Image (tube, rainbow, N blue to C red; front, side, top):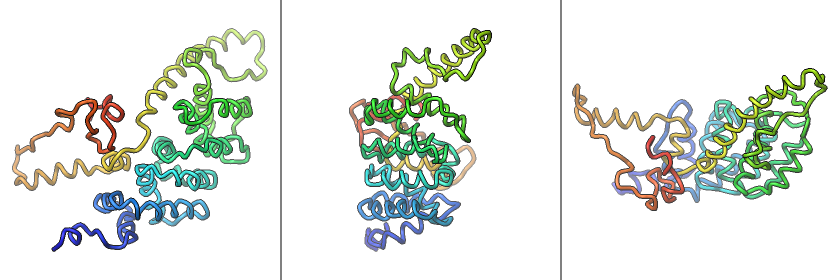
Length: 305
């Protein structure tokens, strides 16, 4: 049997994507094949994002959309950004549900495919008729990109002025945090202690008590923004290992179990643990497979590899 036949290469890419869309499983082999055939995979997945922005897909296609977004992000497909923004504007709750209703995975994808059009994100932020969830995600992502210099801070500053004092309707916590991070992107970190939400008719006698509460809150906000800023360098998706871990697949644990079975499965028999960072220097390729130098990728996280 030829190597091509053994690996499945040469078969229609839509057949591979159909395997990748299988819910309730971790189809690592189709994922690897899709990433290895990115020139064929990316256009199909990008079209899927564009179609989802018109009509939300059914279960299998939604599964493929979720996994496909990670592939597009790993491929740094900038052409995905605009259809992804349209999808965020129209189906924010459904999109967020693909990521277990947490922002981090979706933010990593936005960060990885960003094409430089900051106004596309900020337009959602100022749309008062838009979903509060969509506005919060867009503002959060724009704040990250502004801190990295990929969105002009004066553009973000104008948007922050426009939404100042606005009372949110739904998603209050996300919106408040996103607005705080927006301020962090246009303000020096050392001055975060002076931030505060606008007064809303406080009585003069309560001012001192509220100032004390704000001081404590500002100290907490300072730490949150610093942690946020430090995490920015790890936002972009890396190689296959990063994608698998981001999808939450426990395939590395499964590989360990498979290895033990191959060695006989005897009690007490243990596989030798290998150190992925052994003899890896700062200028060597990162073991995560991203293709970048370790000092610009996972160097600071190596102790927890």
